[in-house]
Length: 200
Length: 90
Image 1 (cartoon, rainbow over the protein chains, first blue to last red):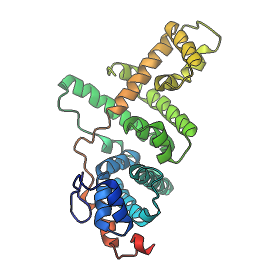
Image 2: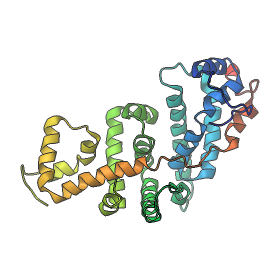
Image 3: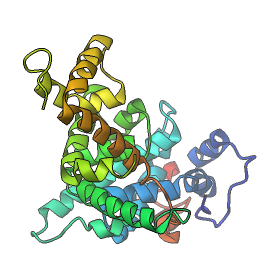
Image 4: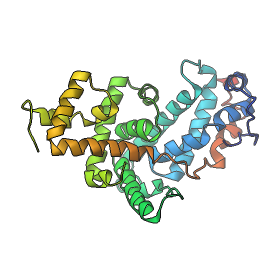
């Protein structure tokens, strides 16, 4: 959990509901504490969707600004987390649209998605998993944005289909269709042998 | 590949491996795919690969020391409670 705009780290006694009420009344510090609880996860989502940390940082700032500007319109029909993630996915899509209009040659930048292997893994297993992670990240980066969003929200983030569909802004049937297409493409890109031998 | 069962079972099964792993198939469809996969090397391996894929993707979800940059609230700070971006002024 990170500090909000005022540098204050939230304490557990502050409930999300009370922070939200204060934020909606214009308390920027309360907004920071409310949103700061999700900042790391939101940033990581943006890195995965955009494949570029610098761009993810820029978009994350925009997401927070849009959330702050729109906080009075949040009516609690979904969780605050879902609402914030929805803004993040919309902003990521906007950034990807902008990127698509740029001259060719700007890549997704899959190496940015590399994460260190878990330290408890044996070296041989680390190498194998590192290879698999690289292949998975490349395959994810190569997906069209709607498919990438679906598989990242459902499989990587572990959200329920209902929540992930809501964040992606589509119905559950459409979301499932995207998810299954994405899995088929990633499976084809990585290869069955690499997947099955990973011991998953 | 083994083509045991109804004609077209293989193509039908291949298109539903993700649904199968997700547990989304109705009981009758699930039984059909299970029966086919018992005799089909491709589909049996496909199920294992799809399960391994979902498992591996779940393993990518380590924040693993990745933290949001300290700048994440910079634009909110600039907008401030009395700024044009304040919810009180929108």
